[in-house]
Length: 401
Image (cartoon, rainbow, N blue to C red; front, top):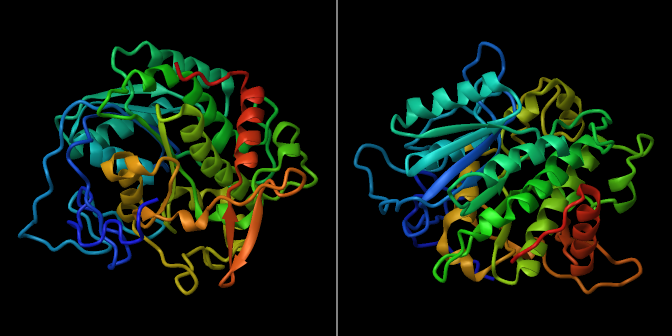
């Protein structure tokens, strides 16, 4: 685990991004980013040229130059030299798209994925407008369908290039109970099982990127909401129950699954792949605007009755600030010493998910009270059980050979 001073007194730029906490700054090292990038679109509202993206895959291609100070505009919280998205709910981009656009400048191939061909074209045009030399490859992908994931993964496995970094950033709308075509709860299927299957299927491509000097990474964009549950409900993971379903609880469970999977991936691969999870921050993304999500988000006090962000109880970030932690998790070489780490505000925050002694009967996941905050303590037994059950459900076992 890196010290809490990790990142301080370093160059404050992470491709133009800075943490919302002025006491924390992190440097994006040039030695790691040589990449191909894949993103998954979430939604693009009609007549509004803004994009939201779910997941990202990156492959090394060439080095990023060291960041240099700008004489035109100071770096500070809430600003970016790459983009200046508004934080109002009427004009925003997604975290994944922001990440993709930031890295595309240094990628010789960007593969954007989504289940809507028209949105893919919009995403391609938007990235090329920002990065004219970007080479874009479109790939249809629906994370809520195992068949669709298998089809997309087969195309990725046909690529000549290996995959150096995979960033899973999916989040389904926080709406009423809904089953996928595979008979699974939509939130858990889209946020965890779909990305889990994709990662398993393209694992050979990820492992192909490994060298003595480089360990490929898989990043799971989770949420602080993972602290609001006791981990995934293993009983309803395979057999969803509409009677007990609660939208925000389902979201929290799916995000806890992201944290557990990142840690277990690092453990099971035995140093061949490094997994990381993170909390991007409270960010007004398109997910909050979805009609099926609004009531759930309001009920949690995240948005006010008027649908606007609750600025009294939450410290909101801009989308570039949220993307910063993702970029750090994907590329900062200092994290190589902390496989399985959880990040918040662009620094390692393992104190929020530390190992907890496993009670083989009932303590698969413990939630403890510390300074009036619920902190989820990861237990290896819980992570292992989730992994094994997920493999059974998706019908694929990970191999690390």
